[in-house]
Image 1 (cartoon, rainbow, N blue to C red):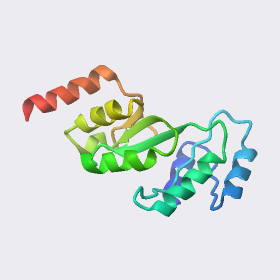
Image 2 (image 1 turned 180 degrees about the horizontal axis):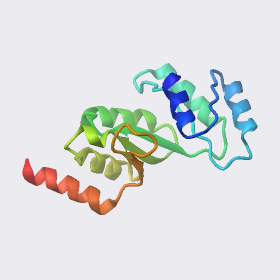
Image 3 (image 1 turned 90 degrees about the vertical axis):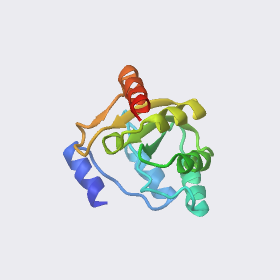
Image 4 (image 1 turned 120 degrees about the horizontal axis):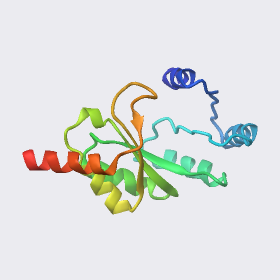
Length: 152
């Protein structure tokens, strides 16, 4: 929560917490007039079936919500397949890949985008919030994928 509060403070945004579905719906109602509400699921493990069922219940109870699946570019391919399979029960609209600054291999991003047929909304390229989050440049990303695979 401290890290989320720090991010909220940096971006001058309010931060609310919800532990139950009712609390979550109350928070959504409180901010129903705003254009965008960001929801962080606090790093739920896709291997925890109970946590995933609870998350699905939270999301199913809300209409008009867009779900972005956030994954690390340093995550092993087999783990990414498991993550996308488990989160596949949710209506994921777009993808976000973090930690591009921590790897030289970007092919997993292409593999996931291709497999899920979902667009890549954002990438992160460092620890500086909000400066290091960006809309990916398809040409630059493609060059990075090809450059790495050609050199190694």
